[in-house]
Image (cartoon, rainbow, N blue to C red; front, side):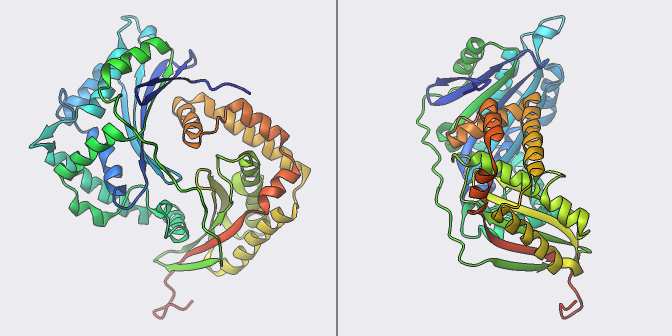
Length: 430
């Protein structure tokens, strides 16, 4: 039921997904490259996209590359890495004006596609590797990015909770890798790794805008030279570790406000039929301002500056994050656990159900209004192997009842409690 806005065509072992729409005056082109999330490659994977955007054969200096973007009517080049379960995804994207809406009608789709393909497949090289200065500069930038996590205590606490919870699983790795790996990365071994990735890892190309499928497919076939090689699927473990006991971790740093984060195993992922009830569960528990965590922990008890929950749907993990007065740790912990128990007992009002249905549905609809969100939405389905179209999700949300949410609630297990607090006195006491 419901069809994806993307039409998919395979070129060799590369997939091209085209969303032909007049909704946007720009054309968005994105390459998504999968890699297994693992210690040996996590830092190289995080480093690679930023090195690729430094220079190409035709535009070897960063200044020349920026001038080319200006020539493309102010196009923007964007690179990022992110985790989807135990896959590590490299994203290289380009947003360009659509030539149909410009008086000169320039062939920007062809030029933009050629430019993105050059960034991906023709990086500037020297001595059989990447340009050394670019690799060293981006290593320095990545080191700063990793170290700056500590400056953002909300993000730091979230990552530390996941790292403790998944300390024997690849998902516990930080998306930007590890500083200790950086000294061992150089222009040659990173280039060797790049060739392996570009030639053998699963790649999906996305095009969103007023473009035709035939034209896009023709351009990719012409411009991407590595389409025919074998690209084995990235295998990810499906089984979830059993929760024998709740792990409690207290970390002391020079902070004033405490961060109480909790990690739960749900036993449900985006691959499962209960994915939509899990979305509803998260929405009722802590996904929105009307949710139990916000109302009961923050508003009624005044125990938290913020309190919410979020899902990692490919891993089946639900995390709770809150900012609290350090002295209120036990009270806040107790009341958060009460909300989990209330969900398990089915203490959910019709109002909570209906509000969550409406808010979640609106949130999903709004994601169709931004090109990169459209791409991300479609990519979730590709990675999961489940065709979760907007219509299918909206229908599922409308049909999800109390018993469905309770069925999911019974499977949710608290795994880890992480508390970031102050250093206390010199003995570590309060």
